[in-house]
View 1 (cartoon, rainbow, N blue to C red):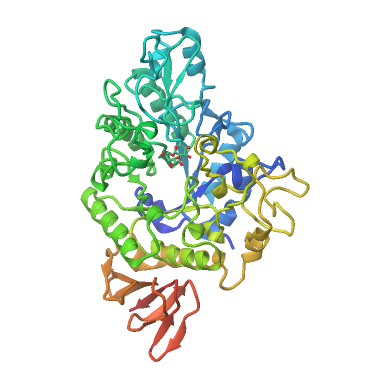
View 2: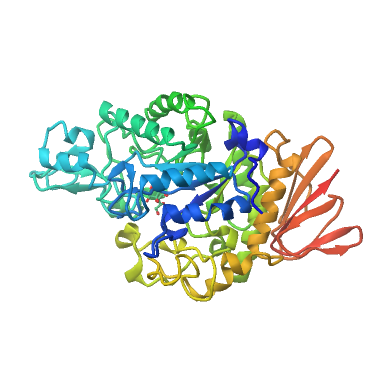
Length: 544
Ligand code: TEU
C-alpha cells in the first residue's frame, strides 16, 4: 500500500542528514515508450515502487540534452531534457508526483566540463586563438618547435593525454573524454552561468544537486606538470585519485565556488542541498567541501575500496565518522554507484558475493548519516561481466579497456522474457542486453518472497525509518567486544539499544545478550538464550 503521508524526518530542512537516497541511472531504470532506453516517464510510473521500498529521495543521473558520449555526463544544454529521456514537461510531472509521494529529487550537475556539442564550445572552435569565446575553456598553445606536443603532461581520467589539438594548432584540456572540454572556472561568465543553472532547477522544485567532479573545477595556476605519467613511469595519474595531490584536482580556490553557491541554495525554502562527488588526498581535505557555508555532504567512497574483512570495514567506518564529527555534518555512505563494479561482484560474486552484499547493506544502513543506494542493489544484481565488447559504450573502454557498462545494465522488473519488463510489451531491445539469469531477480519475482533481497531491503528500510536508535538525533556508533572477524556496534536512544552484528569470519558465531532480532540477512538459529549468526551474514537486534 502506498501511504501519502510524508515521513516525519523528511519534512525538516535537514532531511538529508539521515536520508536514504536511491540513485537512478536514468537510461537503465524504466523505459516508458519502448525504445529500449529508460526515460523520465518511466521513472514517474515507478515512483510508487520507490516509495514502497522506503527511500527518502532519488538522485537522477544526467538527463539533459547530450550526444551521450559519456552517458550524459557530456551536457550540451543544461536547461533542457534530452529527447531520449523526454521533455521538461515530463520532468515537471515526475517531480510533482514524487513530491506528492513524499520523495525528494536530487539532480546531477556537471560543472567541470561541457559537451563538445555545447554552443559555447562550438563558438570557441569557430572564433580562434585568443578570442573571448576560447577564454571560457582551457585552450593553450602546445610545446615543441611547432607546438606539436601537448601543453603539459596531464592525463585524462579515461586514459591518454588530457589535451586534444584543434585544426588551428591550439590544444584544449579535457580531464575526461575529448568530447568533454573542461571549463575555465576563473571566468566570470562560467560562474554566472552555473549560478543561473542552479536557479533554473531550484525554480522547478529540485531538492538538491549531486555535483559531478566537485574537486575538479579549478586547475593550478600556470598548469604545471604532474611530473610523471603512464608514458614516463608506467603509473597512471588517475591512481592518485583520493590518495595524492594533482595540479588539476582539489585546489583551494574551488571552495570559493561553493561559498557562492550556498547562499543560492539557502535562499530557497524546504531544505535544498548539494552533495559533492569529490576525491581528495585525505579525509581532512575531503571534509573541507562540507560545512555551513559550502556543500551539505561529500560522498564517503571508502566502502567502495573496502575488502571483505572486519579490519577493513572498521577502519573505513572509524575514519569517516571522525571526519563527520570534525565538520559537524553526517557521513554519506555508498556501497555501489554507476562508476564502480557492483558490490555483489566485488565481494566474490555468485552466492557468496550476494550473501556478503546483503550483510554489507545491513551494516551500512545501521550507521549514522545518510546512505546512497544504487538502483538494482535492492535486487542483489551482480555486475554483468560478459557484455560483448561491441555493445560496450563507456568511452573509458576504448581508451583503457576498463568499462563501467557492466553496472549499467537495465533493471529487470517482471516477466519471463528479456528485458524483463524494462519497457512495455513489444519494446525494442534494451540498449544493453539483460542476462537471462536476471529473470529470477526481477522486482516481480522477488516481491512477497520471504528472504528475497528486495524484501530484505524493504524490511530494513522500514525499521531504519521508524527506529528511535537509528534516528538522526540518536547516539553514534559504540563498538562492542566481538570475536575476531566479527563487527558489532550499537546505537542508543534512551533505554533502547539497537545492535548490528556482522559475521566476516569463517564460522557461525553465537550472538547473545543483544536482545530480540529485528532483521537478518540470513536465517538465524536459536541456540540457548541467543542465536547463531551464519557466515557472511548480518543481523540487527534490539534491547529495550
Ligand atoms: O566521475 C568522476 C570520476 O573521477 C570517477 O568516478 C571516474 O569516472 C571513474 O573512476 C572512471 O573509471 C564522474 C561521473 O560519476 C562519471 O560517470 C563521469 O564519467 C565523470 O564524472 C565525468 O563527468
